[in-house]
Length: 233
Image (cartoon, rainbow, N blue to C red; front, side, top):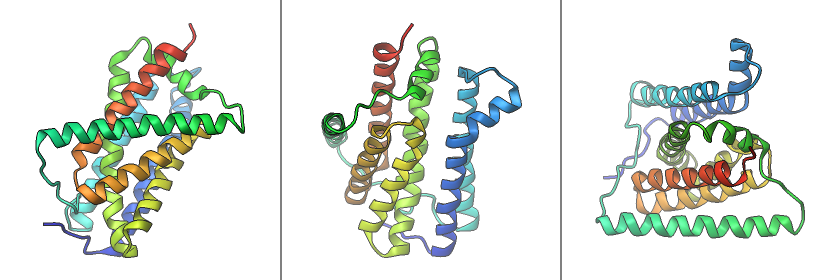
């Protein structure tokens, strides 16, 4: 049975709070660790610490939902499907995402000459010699971002605004903005589209596991492509 958040005010505080924490980590986590460690530049170890910080935010959010809101972390219990549905849905979502990414890139190239993100290339420098870190990064994104944005935020926003459409729009927009530090327009538009697609899927099918798997696959394929086909040296 689907449940809905019982404390809208506390839920909105949770949504705003967790997004603020994520934004602080994404925008300022790296520079803060650089200052503390007095390192000459970003490296794999410092980047790993920022991923651990994101897992810590997820843990804090779980405690907030269960202890302060006093409700399930995931208000929408996962629906069960046959294995073929999991495989088919994941495949279709991946195809849609990569086709859309191609279309977005072609459209952007018609107006601006946008190169690949320098920050992604920087990360590729230490991913190239540390595949476990690459896998951990993709796993972190797939699990934490889906649980936070789709699992936690979306149902609470839908309840607060009494509108699944508004919940999808807000969740997708926030998801896109969180990826903007990569420094390119395409790194905002692609996540914006993926966020909307995933949010609509979650609203219709109520299964977070498929989205976690799909998100992980998108990220690991993208990171592998950047690491081994676009990085220099």
